[in-house]
Length: 234
Image (cartoon, rainbow, N blue to C red; front, top):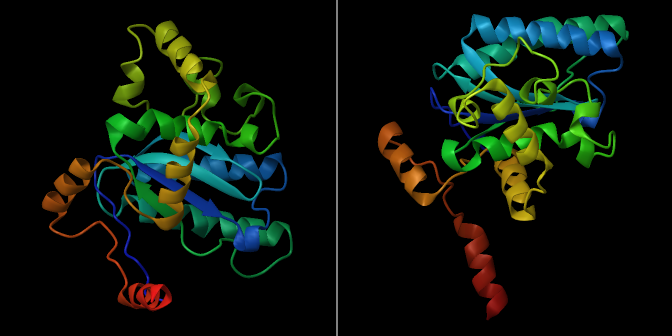
């Protein structure tokens, strides 16, 4: 199978996900979470990637991040893996890869999907049935966004600042937004886009990106399935 090249555009937000190999745990105790968090924070600064939201789950993690250049995301993830994987393997007396392939990413249209993606990420523990509310889960950016606990990993996005004129107004507005049930179509779109590694946004947004990047960002249709479909309908 041909590997699809990632679409990474500087100064625009990207939704990232990385899973454990065969969906096995990548965090087993609090020390693991703390170690990964520290290396991620260092890497984000080193490679100038602004992280706006995150959640660290037992066997995967999500990030909402804006790179300052085309290589920042990959360099950040490689750097974290270079430290965290040997740490994890040595601690648990294992060998081999920890990740399920390379990380996946979806470029998202800021105005339409940024806050939705942030909510999707921080509600992950609730959807998984681990906690009743996002505030009950320690390893996510939710506490920072609602003012419960400042998080030095987080770089607040302009859309978050636009939620209110004061910290209290922003935090309250964000909490209300997250408490609203996300439409199923929104959830499906975010999940599908990052799984497939495709851009999530309007047709106009995609056309603008294609002009900027001078390349197609919409996956082409495959010829063989189309032929099979014709044969099935005959």
